[in-house]
Structures are given as structure tokens and as C-alpha cells.
Image (cartoon, rainbow, N blue to C red; front, side, top):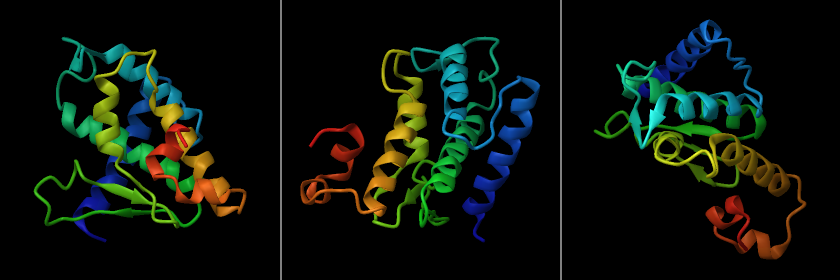
Length: 161
């Protein structure tokens, strides 16, 4: 196991343990992503941690933990999906990705960064993960049409065909 793979597991474990003190139920369910959306909404304003908030210090490692958890949720709900990491990449934490059995790529850390700059009305982590899992499950179960097969992965995730 390489260093980033170990960090993903350790960060996920840390987040689950820390979430218990906040009464957040992080159980790898799709719904658990709503708790992280709420946490981000409460702890960030305009992309910056709220002064005196839980994310004010050590923000990067905490965001990495959220991204790691996001990826683990997707992995648990989409068979054949795996982490792809590169310890040689100087931006390795930012560029961690998960790849589905069909080759669809998701970048959890980049999505978490995008989320902290969005408003509560915009698509949250829950919607993002839900669409990804539903799309992947339809594709792997054979329910897709030829048009869906040829659509760009991001169009499929966003429902734009």
C-alpha cells in the first residue's frame, strides 16, 4: 500500500471518529453525505473557514479526510471502483481519484474544494455522490442506452445528454 492509500484510510478513520463528537452519523451510506454538506455549510463562508470554527486550523487535512470519506462511500456503492493515487505527484492529495469499472474518473478532493466555494442551493456532495452512484449502477447493470454510452461521463453525472 502506498503512502496516499494509507493517508486515505487514516483520514477516513479519523473523520469517522471525530464525527462522533459532533453527533454526525457517518456510516458510509449515501445519506451520510448530507451531514458533510451541512458541516461545510456551517463551517465555511465564501470558501474560507469561519474564524473560531472547526475548520479554522488544519483545514487541508480535514478537507482531505472529507474527500477520502466521499471516495470510500462511492467505492462501497459501486462494484469494481478503485482508488488511483500517485505518491510521486507533488499535488498527489489534490489529485487522488477514483475510477469506476467502466473507467469513469472522479476527483474527490477537487469536488470538496468546489463544494466549499458553492452556496447551499448549489449541488452538494450528497447530490454529486448520488448521481455518480446511480449513473454507475445503471451502466454496470446494463440499463443504459447507446446514447448514454457515448455521452461524456460528466454529462452523464450531471444529467445532460
